[in-house]
Length: 279
Image (tube, rainbow, N blue to C red; front, side, top):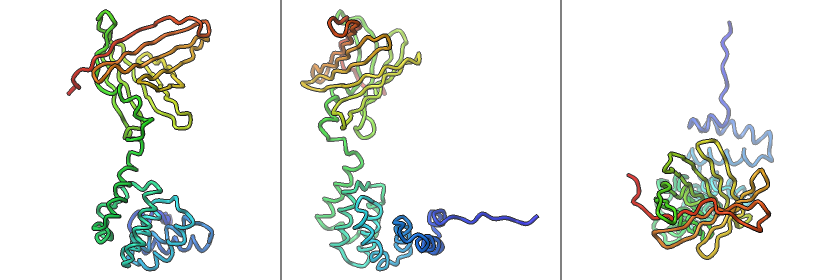
């Protein structure tokens, strides 16, 4: 039986570090599809990897001007320019890459080509911008309006009856908040809370250990309060209010209406007290 072999693709060659072969393969693709920016970008990446920096800079410069939203393309252009000694142009490309959301995982902190750049004050400013790209919501005020909820808490009724414990934490660099509830009866649930820039509102998805789900929407944050609403299958509506009461306490009030909001019935009214984080 004749033997068969699978020819590696241009991308597989590149990922395997076989840059000479990858360059030939990507150039062949670029020749067949001269309008393909991806193929040209990969040719440039191969040239950078092979140390052919002047060629890479000449190719990647116009390509980056045409595609200013591609951070790794701009990053490789910065490497090529730094290697040929064009420090200011390298910083220009790196600053553009930061503006296109380049992250530290790009390898910027270990890239030898940037040795001459790192002594520049401008480089330090660019590096700070790249660090912020790793968590762009961390210091964004609308995303922080629910932070009074973050921490470990003990929940009780107004007359002091223990209802459970709740652990709330920021995740994804501050882009979302996760709740993990354990009730005194053993009932457990988790919610994912996130701020939606498009609507300027919070949303909460609650899931419990019974498989039930509640979608709380239109969360409005103001004056230390976040208020959600949810629509029940039977046509009723819920209102969930979180009220900041200082660094050591908050109130969580759940209400329901069956008459379109004319009257509201309290489902629960919990008073939270901060406790030490679990080990």
